[in-house]
Image (cartoon, rainbow, N blue to C red; front, side):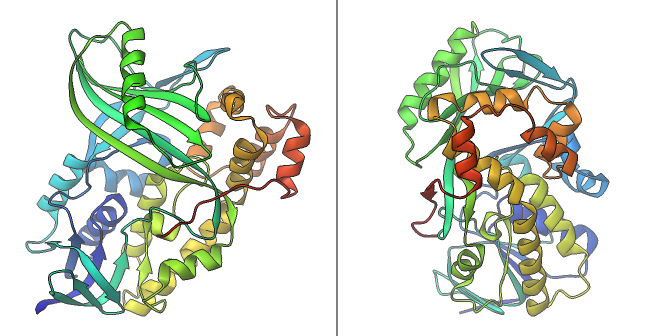
Length: 398
């Protein structure tokens, strides 16, 4: 059953796919677009946050309509030995806001709900038998596992809660690592959305992907109680298990992601490896990639596939330093002492911290991060750098 023809079909209406669609709709308004999403709501059930310093002017303008909350007073971090307030503004995008803006700004009929059954250059087949012909296909459906890569996992449960009385939190707590450590490096993250509404996330840098939502819900409640808050209602919840990449065979992984399309389909988002290897932080890369796509002179299927492959290869090469840091965190630091790595990092200059999260660390930044007495055993650190410490596989299927 023929479902029509479009210039560009974007598979997946999450952050990466949504930003590409938004950039193309704004900068190439003559194009016919189709965003294929299996769920009723674009963006699923997620919250994406970022520092204002992550985005250049073009990226900031693209993201501005999606921002659901902004904190211009900066943010706090807490560690066993010290706490600190940094002045960098912080922002969040919600799934509901992403869905609303895309439905408002994309042409009528551009959003197609359906499960993708098969993908090939120029053609997408849905599970219900519909087929869509496209001049180009961009696959932004994410990847639950990353075969041929090694590292660990960042996993979390986050809850938007309403407190019985005003909570009094005036700015985000981006990292509270003063909490009891468990299952690797643990910290709590909190965003005050209103006087009595706060998003609380319990997060772990762990060797394995196993998640115990019940245990994490209990710890969220304990953390809220420790702040003097009574949770009156849980408004929503999200869970996640994200890859922390410390190394691997990028070419083999890319070939696995492209299997079935013979390299003729462009990849985007996590499926293309476009995230910061240590933090699993994807928004800055998703914005940069969307702007790159919107500015391409050749938006044919082969042109897009070639451009996305070259972009991902450059990103992999540029991420070598962050993969070394991930390997040191996971391979050289004992699980219960990994917090020391981040405690030391957050004593560094605000500019260095900003560039780190944006994925733009300078050579001077890298030297400063590695200089001095390491917060991990020196022998273990040297073994990691020499590649003699085995790390866990991120494979198990795409």
